[in-house]
Length: 114
Length: 117
Image 1 (cartoon, each protein chain N blue to C red):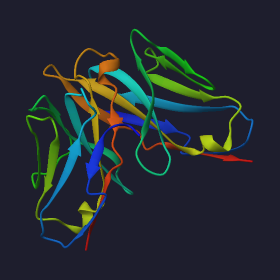
Image 2: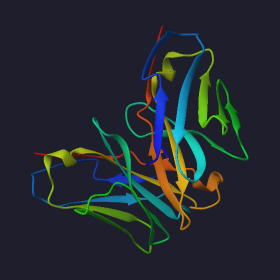
Image 3: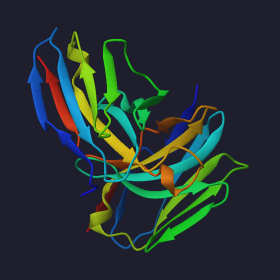
Image 4: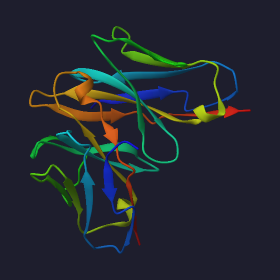
């Protein structure tokens, strides 16, 4: 059974700090790893990392995929209160006839204190 | 706004009943995915359709079924509802379903909150 584990479960930091969120996975037929941010409602897409794109950056957020260690990190620098959210890691696995869908981790609840 | 729409926004019903949730994907997206999010289980993948055909199945109960219509909108049917079916149901869409490329990036709708009493 595919498995995605995120750590820490919860993190409280002060505005301006840098945080690193971790995601490790055990899946068959890995295709890609995705990071999402979920505030009050629906998840919003942040990054997708694949074998051909193992590092992505957007503003203060960046993510790296380590295919050897079967893990990924999401870094947020100079955090702001608006970064407070649950960050979800998900792995897309593939099964011959098409993508199986996403297996999600439980998420990291990040709280940024002013 | 992701461009994915879901109706209704909220739904309250009784155990044993049947409900239908509706999703319209982003313009141009051929894949639709259904997810269930509950407090104890987190986000779970239910089923995927691509251009009208079922493409992948996740943890979907036999009491649940879905379909994607020729205009690409999708419906998720939940029957013989139980208290444990109370959850937030998300629909997501993507351009394609192959390739490990950006075409697989999924965009989520706002969700339908279902409460079974």
